Length: 617
Image 1: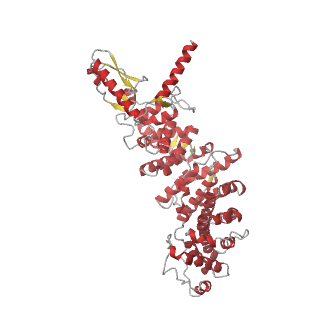
Image 2: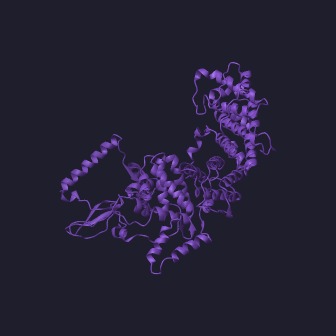
Image 3: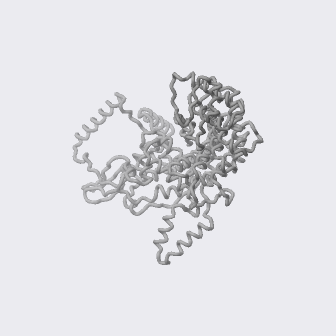
């Protein structure tokens, strides 16, 4: 199951924040330039009336704003000073947030003016004039808003082959360290185009070689140094990414998401190398931090979204063998302990949660922590939680070491069997609570994740969640009567703890206890208990419905006469019949394949099977 990230389609990213470059006021010599094309316009320096945060406009001034836009383009087409160009573009960027005024000004000629100012028409220009950088940045910002808000501009973008021009500009500045603003808004415009036009996604992917180009942009932003084909050097004590590098990386990740959105469905074998390189870059991304905690979370969130598009066979690079230095450090730590400190050595090995079976699991550990943080937020589960849960589920299904590591972290051997599975603060408790969430998509992916960690074995899942929490998944899979899923997993040794074994239910489907007359008494289906004689009551054991150890419930039927039992049974039948007729309750039954269906249909299918069996005999 793949989940596209809805957050990538939010238009809020299209209105850029205040530019990093200080706004350039109109000097007195420049004001007549605008007045010459707009005699009635009052040109006020930006420092006196700051509209950079303006997103709503008065309808009564619509005509004036249209004229101002037309006048700005008349200025930009002339050879005016750079400071005047920047001031005009800043005003145009603010006005372009209003969709209504863009219809008359969005023409091919005006688009070409902006393309020229953004250096998108000059193939051989090397971006050497630093004084032009503010003009390029402001032009790209204007194009972002205009393309997003105007359908005419979107069509003109296709006609003018804007995507190819943006890729050419990226190639000019991909190795430049001091033009991050240009790269950032180039990438943002590329993201907008690929979001609005599926044809541009294909063009970027195949014709323009956007996948390796954008991957190289990420490598440059992260300053990656490769130690092996798919392994990079990680400096855990190094400084965090700068705000500019972080913003550039986030825009590249979002553009890559659109380029690769269908890659998990169909991809050529020859693309595997490029996807593995990208996955290795994303692993590096998960192991570094941004300038703030919020920026780090945003960076990792976009990395998770992009990893969801990578073919699952290429995700093996998320884990890698321990390096010689890591192995030596681990051995040195153990050697420093006295030889008689066996328990302490085992503790050191167990506490090293980043290592499993000789493999470095740092990236998976980061993903697990990211998932838990999203659960703890308690909101926006569909957008924020389902992508990482889906990613971990697919990784666990396809890669044995990842599954075993996650099983060890999420579903460790049961020791506390006295509390319900959904009660507590562990990752397991949080995921079990999600299995009964009101959002169907959230509950399904949470249950699927735990089911895969249990190797799709029903008895193992019930052990950790209880039958009540797992019923929805089992009904959808047709496994209410037990069994296992369709995928094959290796057989592991039994990891039951002594605490669980002492309270472990047997494989029966009913509860059997010994009453005072030493006769077995059936207590009902699915409440499974071991047969033990302990005076007048059953011994404590795990209730498979709730998934925890509980005291045996008193059987009220024991004290009833046969007439009373019959009366209560008919009373229950009449109540169920009334609820069914009023369509408040619909009796369901199990079909032979284990799925649920209306009771009448289930009974008819069993009747057909019995008739067929009798005819055969």
